[in-house]
Length: 401
Image 1: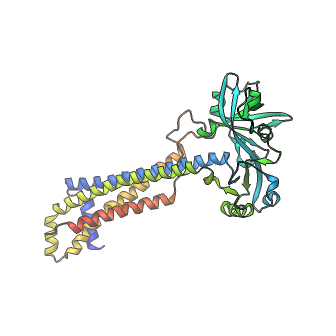
Image 2: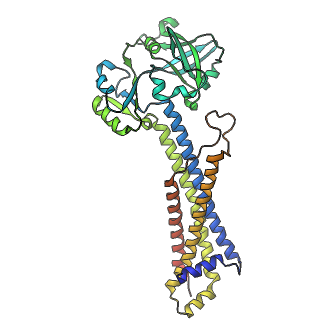
């Protein structure tokens, strides 16, 4: 074993003499380990929440969404629809008409986001798997049915035994303000078939209806849509297919993937995650600054040993390397220990779900956790970088006389 590393190891692990300097060194090590653990756990929880939320959005939003760049609607007969549908990798296309509407039921009312969908929508998104009460049903013969977000469902006073239809009102196109409801609004009636739990913003305002009903309320033609939802076969590249469809449709249309459909959420999520990473990095930085103090005190405490080393012919650079090695040992042990503890905590949460989300959550019972190798690598490298800077600063500015 090289001499500087051997001496550094003796200083850190020797049990013959425990001084306040040793205690401070171990406090520095534990501080780095705790900061590293906290960073790994928090990042993994953020990963878990992100994956869960993305999964829930995936249930409601399509893999690709086609809209007009300017204007609200378009007719499928005005685009190369057959060529679009036959594009390699496309599994299904759903016609969607979406509009703000006013819903009334008995004495309750609410402004809603009404989404009219066709029969392909369930297979395309998976909304039928998120029905909490009732069943996935949009039409039966001439009868129309509605699926409501759970929060909206209960706020409107609807229950499983409801046998009274819900009224949907949409302002007439180009009619201006009428003197009566019939003059100002197109109204339709449908029975609630059930409710779904996805995400609070969705559950509190979205209503799913048959596309034929919404077209009638909007006075649209039978092939008029506000958007087309596209599902892809398993293993097909979303980005490549997105480019193909964009080239096919031209600049008058936009083709959005799931991240582009929810840009605000994903930007906020990434910003929050980065903010948490920086805050916890500052905690680790403070721990490495504590390492500066402990290493400086150790150098002062070992003056006699340093004099002895010099008398034995040890060069000053070798002495510096000795204390540098000790500082790096503290940082590396703290980082590795923190990573292992963080891994253990996350694994236990994944396996046993110790920390619960609360009885009011119907999606998952425990806090979701998702560990990623890149988080471990970046955290380790960051701790080592901060440790290296702190230790280098200390040994370069120490007085060895």
